Each structure stands twice: as structure tokens, then as C-alpha cells.
Image 1 (tube, helix red, strand yellow):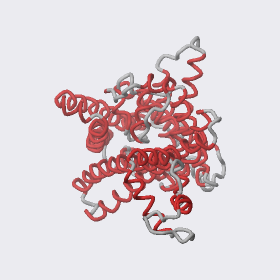
Image 2 (cartoon, helix red, strand yellow):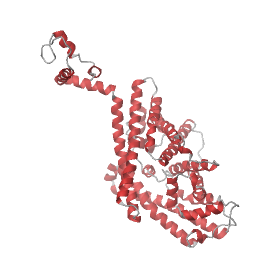
Image 3 (cartoon, rainbow, N blue to C red):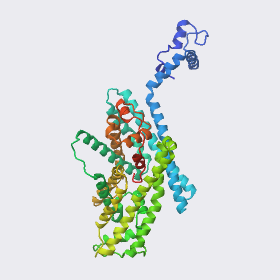
Image 4 (cartoon, one colour):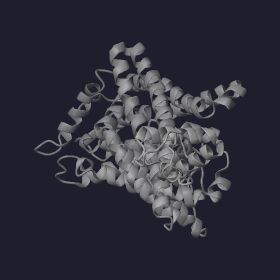
Length: 475
């Protein structure tokens, strides 16, 4: 144990013993060096005799190895919070699935949810610990570097923790973090150029165009959508996999596009009215418990004191947000089926179409106006990265394996995107959306170190408009 490194203000007992001719324990010294055990005992006794020396020694340890304590502290907090939240959400959603369909046994539910919770806890705990620890260490090793550079480099160092997640989730994190980085850069550009005009309902227009691209890929090009996201759309969507495959076979037939199938063949023998009614009912049954859970969890996790102090108001807000989101998603899938059925019944096309499916998706996306005005930009930013991802892969003639699986590209994109967001979170927090700042402070166990950031953010809490957008199923 190198005590001199930790306690520079203490004199070496062996040297004092040699000078005085006595050992540290009071025994007569023979001129030989003191044993390590005796040295340790003598130093321990001297520490116990001098409380001020103990405080000084701990202060020296804290100043020199502060980066270790910062990293461990942040890692434990983030691991417990995010792992526990993922466990709560997983049990709620999978439990509803178990009660409704009974296709999942209790043991399978526990194993699946526990594995997902562990991966989420490791991701946030590892990233938070490495980010805080690296930032503190860089401040000690290279104190002349700017705070922006330290934050950026620390985020790059912590980003490889994304590897603990599955490939589809890594890709999802990459594209959504990139979208948030673009949003932050755009806000900074608008801050410096306030004369730039604002497009009326631009967020709703982005949502409509993005939904059109996604529904086109859902109907005809599922190879351009990640498997997990396609499964989510297909479960909520109005048509089964066999019905969609029959449409694709006729659209991309070797001899050209074939004649369209009758509507009853695509709806399982149901009429147009019966098919629409069934689609609306299935969408309501699937989206209502999902949205109720996703609106309730953030309030319990991040605003529990307010929820307990005003339970009636909080529950009414949860129910209102759940109702709006359920109407939006149920109307989306139901309107898609209604427009598709009306097109087949009234227009009666001679051959199977292609871009009609994009048009149907755009018309169905008009349900975005059921949501609050403050929620629409968030929904647009949830759908836009998926739409761009589908469009890029659709433009590739021979995509082969999906691009995100090559050379760890998704980790590189995530690293630079999250580094950009965290850098502006430290230096210019006014260009970062308020709920993202709150999420960073809570999920990454961050205490504002910069005076400007502390004055700007204050004690941020979720507002009624922010809470419902944190765990949207689009994310």
C-alpha cells in the first residue's frame, strides 16, 4: 500500500523510528527497516489519534480519485432506475398479453422481461458511469481542454456500451439519437437566425409524409423495415401477413403487375364495412392498454410526489392523454383500411397498384390532429427517422444485409449523435428540448456542474405535454 501517495502530509514512521532509535510501536529498533505489518499498524494508530488527519487523507483520496467515485455513483443510480423502469413496463405489457392471449407462460415472461431489463440497466448504467468518470478524469489529466471537448470525448468513450443491446435496438437508438442531434443543431441554427420563417403545421406535414413512406414499405417492401418494427406495425395494422404477401406477389409478378384480388379475398371473406369495423375494434383493443401503461409509467417514475399530492388531477390527465393517443392510433389503422376498401370498391383498378398504398398511409395519418399541438412535433420526430431509413434502403438495388449491421455503423452514428446532444446540453441547454434535458438528468444521474446550465434548467419536471411523449411506442 503506497500510503505516501494518499497521505502526503504524514511523515514516514520508519524514518522517524530510525532517527529516534525506537520503533513505531515503542520497541527498540535495531537499524533494520520496519516490517509492512508494523508499518501498517503504526500508520493506522496515528490516523486514529488525529481526526483532522483522517479528514485530510480522505480529501486527498477524493480529489485524486474522484473520477472513480463519480463513475460508480452514476452507474449504480442509472442501472437501478432504468433497469427497474424497464422491468415495470415489461411486466405490465407482457402481463396484459399473457392475460389476453395466454400464449406466453409465466416462466417465459419472467425470463424475457428479466433479460430485457438487465440489458437496459447495463446500457444506461455503463454509459452513465463511463461518461461521468471519463469527463472527470479528462478534467484532471487535461485541465486546459475546454468543457465542450471533455463532454464530447467522454460521450464517445461511453458510447460502446450500446453493444450490450440487440441489433435492432442498436439501430433504433442510432437513428433516433441522430434525429435528436439534428433537432438540436436545427434549434441552434434558428437561435442564431431568428428571422427564419416558421412553416405552419410543418410537424404535421412531416408526420403525414413519413407515415406514407412507412405504410408503403409495410405493404410492399417489408425488407426495408427492421423486423421488430415491422412486427409492431403488422400487429396493429389492418391486414395479415398472408394477405399482404398476396398483394406483393401480384404487384411484383415476373410478367408485370397482375389484376388486383377481390376485397373479400384480402379481408377473409368479410365485406368492406365488416372489415373496417373489425379493424377499428382490434386497434382499440391493442392500443388502449398499451397507451395507458406508457402514459402512466413516466408520471409514477418521475413525478410521484405530484401524483400522490394530486391523484385525481393526475389520473384524469393520464386518461385524457390515453384517450387522445388511442383515438389517434386506432383511427390511423382503421382509416387506412377504410380508404383501401373504398378504393377497391369504387375505383376498381385494373391492376395492382404501388403508390396507392403510400397515398392511403398519408390520408390515414391525418389523425395526427387528434393529438395536442405540443405533441405533434415529437410524433413527427419519432416517425421521420424510420421513414428516412426505409427510403434509403428502398433506393438500394441490392441491399443484402441491412446497412446498420455492417462494421458497427449504428454504434458510430450513436456515438457522435449522443456526443452532440450532450455537448449542447452542457454548453447551450436552451437549444435542447426540456424533456430531453430532464431525461438526461434523470436517466444518466447527472447533476449540472455548469453554472449556466444550473440557472437555465433549474428543477426541471415533466409537464403534462412532455410526460406522454417519453415512452411513446414509436420510440
